[in-house]
Amino acid sequence: MPKVSNIVPMGPLYQIRKKATYEAFTLGPDPEFVFVIFACVGLNALKILRAINHRCSVQMSNPQYPIPVAGSPEYVGVSNVLMKKYHMNKTAKYRELKVLLELGFIEEYERKSYNSSRVVRVSENVMRYTDIMNNETLQNKIQGEAIKLRKKYRSQPTPVMPAGADKKNYTLVKTKTGKEWKLHAEI
Image 1 (cartoon, rainbow, N blue to C red):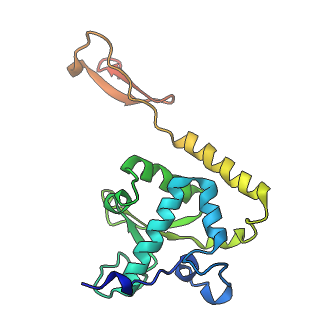
Image 2 (image 1 turned 120 degrees about the horizontal axis):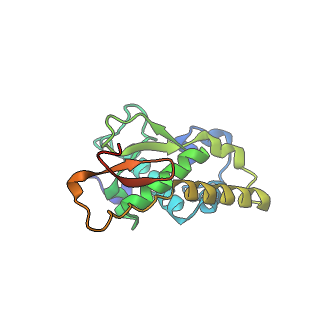
Image 3 (image 1 turned 90 degrees about the vertical axis):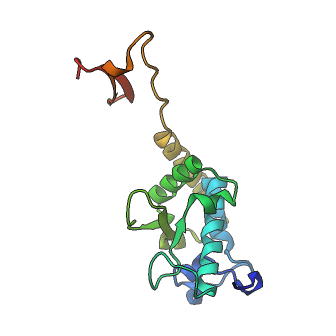
């Protein structure tokens, strides 16, 4: 079991192999522009960024640690247990991952099965936003796009079964406006 002090934090520039071509602003694992990008998206996006950076650092510093993609320690399995350490529940994690994937700030590796955790890394698209620190309109644009995507992916409530109805005669059907209960005869 390795000591925790052996873990060296390595941020997203190291993960996308751009460390040598771009100077980091701070001594921390993240340059400030990456932090600002994820902060514009929201608090849960920052939690996901922190989880990716931490797990990546552990994978790189410990050869016995299982890596989800062979030869690419920058890919991280974002599991529910990992995100629980950052006080993030399962539904918030999936909703925020959808938003980040749609915005292009993280990349997803092909999963083994639908039931397994998503395997993601910080995308190279973040390098397009190196000037976000001084550009308030760009910050507002990213924040607005994230809000629109959250509204788009917001789950609709499950419809209520009609009063006095027998559940055996009804089926939950997906429609254009959402989900609703329909009689078997109507289907």
